[in-house]
Structure formats: structure tokens, C-alpha cells
Length: 186
Length: 186
Image (cartoon, rainbow over all chains, first blue to last red):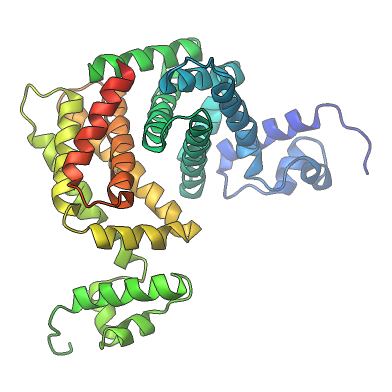
């Protein structure tokens, strides 16, 4: 094992994002990321399985937090109310990282394979939330509909958050998007 | 060019689906599909670019019909009403093919790569419907939300349609799913 490197993960993530934006994800190597961060490739692989994981390593934690929020929702919460609590949990996790989220979005938008990975991540999130709702006794079709609707609000709200000129709270924008959905369907 | 083969497309599609279900998509070759259909590989390639296109060849027509329905919606239709008309158009195209849809679903569910392709198809459908809504003067975020919500209803309704024991009309189930969404958000 090499010596301990202060904030190696943060430095590697920052270096990777710079390089992905400068020359594209496909054209960037792990060696270059490590070098830019002043670290070795071996250190990189201590924290990330590959250069894609720099972008998607947080997905599991995000999904876990959102599922935990569905599970912990009050007994009398409707399926959609439970999903709204999951989005609040997501906002708490992502809300302080708007610059990073914008950069990440730019990198992913420029690469077909990464776009597919992002779609899969959202589909898995929907399945996981539907499972958690079924665990609360919600019938299958209703659970899927609430989860899919929640993911629709997540996508649209998240994109609004990163593209608006002003940096508003993600939680506020999720709330507005849910309100817009209610108006739209009423 | 070979001689004309009566209903070559239908025979190839049926043969492909049989083989995909029997031995899996990955393990099936174009030569085997053609042979099972009593045709040549050359004939196969006259109609399909590859063995995946047997499953996804209809995607463009489906998307075109759904977008056309959004474009042709009455001027006073709300964004979600226009999306509902798009789902009616989808129901008209897919409604008579429940057995085929069930088989196709079984094949796709068994293969990660095909699942990804299906996710991408739905994402492209959402983008295309949002574009069509923007063409009607709907603001971007509202257009995306209506399109994403429509795709959520499509997914859930379509899965309900193919998994229910009874063969009910797809259009009816889409309508019920929209009603369920309205109840859920009210």
C-alpha cells in the first residue's frame, strides 16, 4: 500500500472531470487522471474500479438514501408522498454540488455510452423505489406508477436546477415540479 | 435479387421470436432464423439490418405515430391531453399484437443489452414528444414533464396490459393508468 494521500478521492474526481471536459471521456486515460491529480494510477484504482465509476460511483448511495426515505415515510403517507420524501433525500445529497452536477451533465451528454448508463441508473432507481413501495403494501401497478412519476419529476427538476442561471435549492425545484404535475393532471 | 417470398417479414419475425425464446437472443444466429423460416440469410438482410432489428424495427413507426398525434392534437388541448392522444395512437398500433408483445417482453427481459436498448427507445420517445409539445408553444420544462409523465403511463400501462391474465384493450388500460395518476396527484 502507498502512503496516505490527503483527499485523494476529491483530487482524482476533480482531475477526471477537468480532463473529461477538456478532451472528452473516451480520450482520457486513468494514467492521465492520476498524473493531473499528482497521484499514481495505483492510487486511482484504490478508489475507483474504472474511469466511468468517477461519474457513477455515487449512484448506489443516492439510490440507498432514496429507498430509505420511502421505507421510513409515515405509515399514512400516500405512495406519491413517500416518493416526494425520497426526492427530498436526493436533494439533500445532491443539493450542495450544483457545479459538479453541471460538469457531470456536460460530460455525460457528450457520450452515448454514458447517456445509456445514466438511463439505466434512473431505471434501476425507479425499480428500487417501486419495490420499497410494494414493501409498504402498495399494489404493484400503483407502486410502479408512483415510482416512475417520481423519476419523471426527478429528471425534469434536476435538469431545471442545473440549467437555470440562478442557483436555487434543488428541493424547492422538486417541489415546484411536483406542483406543476398536480396542476397538469387536475 | 431472389424471387419474391410471400410474407417473408412475418415468417422471419415469427421464426426469430421462436428461437429467441427457445435458446436466448445471444445464442441465435441470423442463419438459424432464416433456416427456421425456410428462407435464406440474404432474404433476412433484405428486411432487417441485424437480429436486434427484428425486435426494434417498429420503434421508429411507433414514435412517428405518437409524435404525429401530439402535432395533430386540437389547439386547445393541454400538454397532457396531447400526450394522451399520443398514447391512444400507440394503443392503436400495438393493441392487436398482445401475444407478440408478451413474447418480445420475455426476450428483452432475459438480455441486459436488449433491456438497455428498450430504455433508450423510451428515452428517445420522451424527447421526441417533448420536442413536439415545444413546437405547440409549450414551455420547455412543462413539455418535458408532460412527455416524461406520458412515458411513465406508457410503461406502467403497457406492462399491465401484457401481464394481466385477461386480454383487455390497451387503450382502456392507458386511460385507467392516466386516471390513477390523476387520483394519485390530487
